[in-house]
Length: 312
Image (cartoon, rainbow, N blue to C red; front, side, top):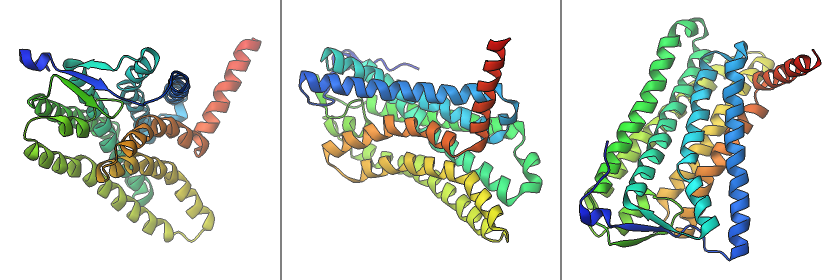
């Protein structure tokens, strides 16, 4: 995989405008974003560690949760370190090659998460609507295949889009109003005719975002209808509790991008991008930790085990 272009393309330079602020403002933004980045990394690493250490959490649902945590760590790491560098040094320059690599990895991880959330919704559907067949349908091989599909399709789609953008012409110096090399911003500033690419991106969004969202919503409609048939109020509450964490994550994940590509305000673009890139992966481990009794018990068990080890 190579994003090298011709000599004229390689001379292209992007200026990531990020956020206009005074020196003090940049310092405050730097500290706030650094804190958010630390929380994302530490929170998701905690989930990865717990799932691998606690045998009770080694089942399909938490296998997918591990993949989700890893994706959150990776895709926030494609944008935030560069943003922190910009805020710290006030150097907004980014080379063409660096921009293409950032675009590729960001799209790849974001798209993979879309398909992974779909796999998680399917897992919950089978667990609640087809409980007697759960172990057969959600076997280890099927789970690995679903996870591999999510990662593979995300990477292939990102490669297609990145190579399409690579073929565009850009002025030698370009200003990107967002804080990273966003696909929408790159198409907007290109000096090429981007009509066909814009149409392709629209279809692509329907395939990698709208279609998985439709599958997720269909799964949850079936789940809700099935749960409503349960006579016991305690049983209904338990079933809804098992699915609520994942549904909240779905809303957080799909909400900002949908608004991002519907509206056209540059200020809203940056605000929604910040929510999508930093807030969503920061809230994911909190949502699963605070609303999931298995995770809470795993944390307590790990803490108690560490205390025993220290005492002995």
